Image (tube, rainbow over all chains, first blue to last red):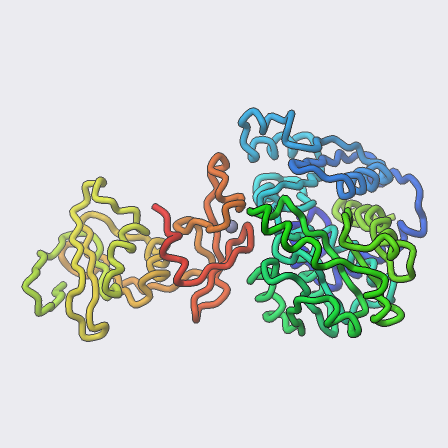
Length: 307
Length: 160
Ligand SMILES: [Zn+2]
């Protein structure tokens, strides 16, 4: 199934072949960073009902580098939704004005709902705690750039696996490949959701839940660290109790493999010691920089054009 | 249609409508809820609970005069009463027997337990969609938010 005209709701909707095609196009944009006119007749709507900096800016940059016009909003405030308009009507409006709709919303399932309403392709830029497929695409792309492969490596996904959509999406994304093993490292309160574990089982991916990074660090090639987000907690006391327990320090990383790389979807707060930033382990700034070429690749494939 | 129950509770035959038999004992009210039958519709409805059954030990029976169930409705009954048998009655005789099988996807009837699921935004008026992940034991998954629900949770999530 090709990309043209396609909705991007979950990374699980894609195959390994799809992603390999995407990565090749991303490679091209990475090597040939310039302004294109491929999407000059396109309007891309960025409908961010929930605030975002990195994802929104990288979509905007990607769209503009491809020559598209960009419209949108960056929070629910000031939109007609705040005045009581239904989401469905807002989507219909965007569908009329734009050619591709990028949507982020704090409710799970919003992107799928939008895709059911809109004729335009809809790209999920994050729906609540559930999916963030374009983040997973750039995360997998980063691993491929760093190691030359996604298969055969051992991963540890650390932090908030229950409410964190980047973590869930990365885990889902790995199931499209052949990881040697995935460690799911989180406080008991923030374990991966049942549907995520079920997907791992269903797809025959070897995984193990763990509570301490220290216990698994020696075995790991890719350490995927996520922020424990306060706003995902129903109870702020619960947040205060767990936030300090998953800090990544240089000392901890030195117990691991020499080639170990640390990924993080960013923004990070204090879950990674600043000294790690300039070490050979840190790959998260490179990872973030891949957001633009990967999203350029996605937008152009959806539009049915190639560089 | 003779129910042949050795029971002193007798309910007369219906002329046109539906008889739902072999409902697990105690689940008749839940079945009515699925069908949206509250009594206010004016349908003549008989509910027999905890009657003797050779197959089930005890069972419930529902007879609805004047309404033929659709196969969609019948299939949702399977969620709470997989053993149920359904007879459509026309002119006092069994016109059609319907088998209950849980469909691969259930639209409506079930509420998603996740408060931040888009289907719980009342203003949007969405119909829920659940897909069957496993049949034994029954496990369903919300198509919108991914939340999984089990048989035990299901009964509380059947909405009117
Ligand atoms: Zn749901």
